[in-house]
Structures are given as structure tokens and as C-alpha cells.
Image 1 (cartoon, rainbow, N blue to C red):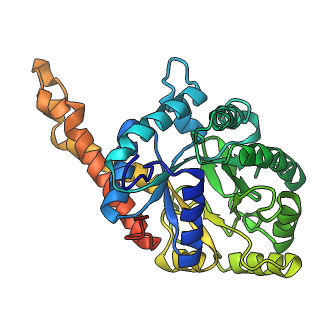
Image 2: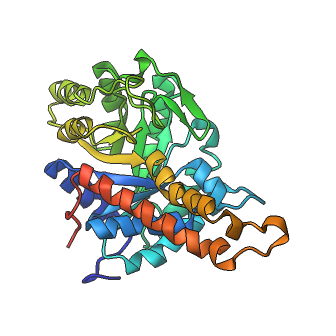
Length: 346
């Protein structure tokens, strides 16, 4: 326990409060994908320097990498980093929630379902869940199948005091083996949103985050290749509100956020986005100074022409510190863009 009894990793109650504050204040939390203890520290440092709470997330590919290349076990990797985060986050004066990113149907049994079971066991013993939210990515399935699985997972998540994130329609590009073309299908309709509310409810069956599509694409593309329409989110909110009588019913997630313009982000925030994923930009921010170090010190990091190189230059701590600082800086920039700077829980 830290900061007058507040946990560094959000409790279920605190996570709900974080999301409520974001929606009411029209800001969003950067959700930073991590693949190592070092990228975790970079994300935590960025949030702390921005005085912003935030979300740390692990994709299936990230979890497999964290599980080690000998076994590549996703659950082991995710649990290990989550446990590590519960310890080291206490040294940062912010609160973070732990989340698992994109999980398609064929990986549910090897990732999200076992993690839900782990948290259910913890909750049964009077503890908090290990993760605060999990994502079910059913965008490759029919909407009917997507929502049927979503109902099952939402019930399990709610029982374990966990929030579910659902992606009901495709995000373009590719992430961890799930890919969709960049075309007109990348826009969620009001009918899609109504069917989602009918199947998953509007909070009474458990809270969920909704990754609706408004032209989103994973990765970074040259101008003109991606047409974002964040104003579409307002149509979804109003269409479902008219049908069910609940104003601003959805907590939206902005996928494919890397490279978005300030205007696009602002419009999304005004229309209910409370979480925006960042991976591509932070990956580049982490790697760029490492590449610079290697190029500038090639004769130190390599044993060129029979020489011995320079231990100080190939020591991973030397270039690792540069990588952490650069990624942390990109996280602070994301906080500013999403208006979360200075909003941390006191």
C-alpha cells in the first residue's frame, strides 16, 4: 500500500473510478503495450513524469515473448510481468491498471480464459484480480458469434471483478497475426452498436469497454492511406441512447492510435474515448536510440578486426537507459495529447 493507503496497481473500484473520471473529464488514458521489464519501467516512468495514471497492456505476442523463447507460454509471461508490476509500480507516484490486449478466438483457451480463472481464484480468497481488464478480439468472427463469446467472457470477467474490452468490428492492418484489409468495413454502424447493447447490456451484466471502428488501422501509414472518422462515435452514442434511454452509454477505446492527428484525437475524446492504445510509436521510440548508439559505436559494440570492443558500449545497461528514456518521453507526449497530464488520483 502506498500514498495514503492507495494501491499502485488499481483495485477494481479504483479502475472504475479512473474510467469514470476520464469520461466525465473528456480525457483518455494511454494504454501502453509492454514486452519486457524495461518497457514496463519506461511506461511507468512516462506516466509518473506526466503525473498521469495509465494502463499497461500485454498482447498475446508480447506475453509469448515474456514467457521466454524456450516455452513461449503466454500465461506464464503475462502472470510474471503482472506480478513484477505489482512490486515495482509502488515506486512510481501514479496508479496503473493492467490489461491484456488483442486476443482472437483461437488463443482464448491459451490466454484470456486461464487468466480469468487465475483472477477468479484470487477474488475467491478475498484478493484483487491479477489483471483489471482483458480484451476479447472477435473482429474476425461474425458479429453474432463475436457477441455470443462476449457474453460468456463478460459473465466470467464480472464475477472476477474484471472489465472486458470487446472489438466488434475490424481494425485495419495487422497486430499479432490478426489482420484486416483497409476498406469500408472499418466503420462500425449504429445497428452494430445496438446489437452489442442488446447482447452485452449497458453495464447491468458487467462493465465493458468498446473498441468500435472508425477507420482505425494498426501501425503507421503515410498520409492519405487511412481515413479516420472519430465523429462516428457520436452517432453510435446517440443511436444507442435513443434506443435504450441511457445517455453516452459507451466507454470507447481508440485502437490504431499511433500517428493520429491532434484534431482526430480531440474529436474522439469528446465522443467518449477513455483509452487509446499505443504500441507502434512507443516501439520506435524505444528502438531508435538503440540503433543510434549501435551505429555510432559499432567498433565498440563489435569486436572488429580481432579487437576486443568496449564493454561500456555493449553493456545492455548503457543503451538500455537511452531506450527507456526515449520511450518514457513518448508516453508523456501521449498523456499530453490525450489530456491526461496532471490528472492522477491524489
